[in-house]
Image 1 (cartoon, rainbow, N blue to C red):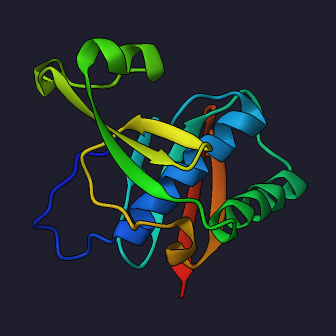
Image 2 (cartoon, one colour):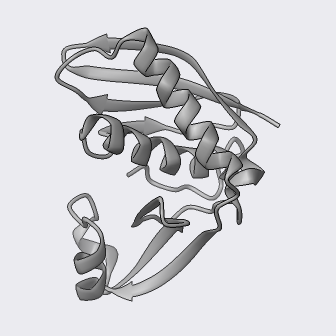
Length: 151
């Protein structure tokens, strides 16, 4: 989970919301778990996943297609506050810092994704725009996806 810094000038709620959708798409396609590293910026972002094999070019195209399908489905993006105990029953808290407190903010993208998050998001997936994978590379079991958004 990327640490949210509200003072960053390049922070973009659309990009951060797209990251949630990309994460869940990767989980569903590759059963790989959420990102191991992410750098989210307004112009272009990157996100890393641990995978056993390098995805084919067809699979990379399918990732992009599925992310855009979810974006265009106009899902609501909402936040819910749960006790740590309630949150642990609903989502993985493995990457949550120990000092996160007892009230955990869960961000949901419709019924597609839910995870703890501290950053701002758009209110509907359609606000994200068009998701485009700019490039990928695979080294030592890590797939890096660089992506951008078009209005």
